[in-house]
Length: 429
Image (tube, rainbow, N blue to C red; front, side, top):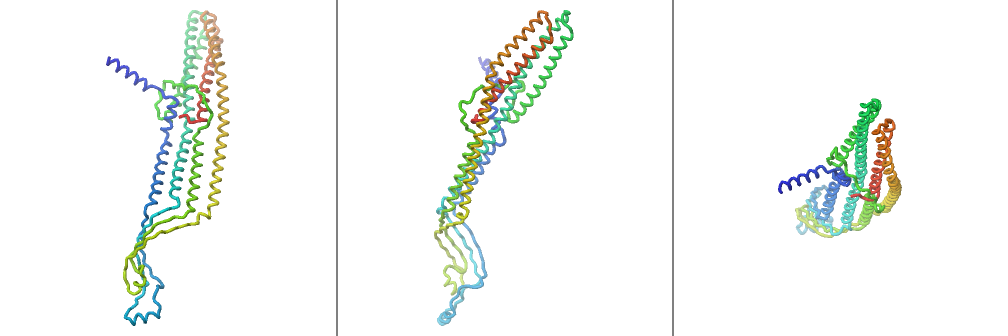
């Protein structure tokens, strides 16, 4: 019992290892494997740095200033007052022209007019816009994946049909060889089928080389290991239920609109005053008690605290131009949206008509293959009965092969048009 279970698990593992990825698997893998996907992490890191700088802007700001000056003039007592002080034995040195101070300034924002909050919103909006731009750039990968995937599907179909053609030519060649040995066919008849068989084998080599090239490119794009001999699974023929457009390009335009709203809030915040609490402490000469320092030279410690209201009106000078610039960018976004939707509707209409055309061709393709196969079998029946017409038989085999190839091309193109329609209208993943 255990041996059977182990064999079953090994069989399942082998099947899983050799299973070929689906179209959705390839799309998802291409998105995760593409180097641009790391842009999300880089953008988030940049946002973290910007938000950290904004949060630290609200911390107390401390500054140290050391200065020494040599002044051309200093405050002093009037000359009429000096005799009065000297009569009382008081000597007035006055302030020295050489002055110095070492000062510490501490400022704490009480209200910045909403500038920090506006900048935070602007940073978050810029991050979202960058993410949506990355989404739009990565979305273009789906079309590249589909081109390679459906190209491989078509090559697999043509390879299978080429194998069928080769087998048909080989079996009929062997029948002709039998007739030749009995004297009812010529070597030229056998050589004609042999030449077609060699041509089919040459085409098989070209198909295999093309498939290896396509598989290598798809593996490079997705990072998946594709089996060179196993056919890719064909996706179901599902037409999108709605043509409502949910493309990342539209989300990008929405994010840019939100970004403009955040910039408008920053412009409004720049017009408001800001209130700061501050404290200053310094050691030097002269101090705050200047009269005492005029009577005697000393180094004193001084300090003051208070509130400061700052209202800069410089933003008013450029406000009209800033608002006009924002309005112009909004109009550009609306124009880009209208242009994108118009082009998208044209592409959707074209692909819808193309899918309808190919779908209408499918019954005729099946009927044509059935008829060509019946005609070819009738020609082979004549060959078995000794009525030999090599040229006619080759023509019937070629017609059947062309009908099958045409049917397979229509089938793959129909699938490709449906999934291209899906990409045009909405995100497939």
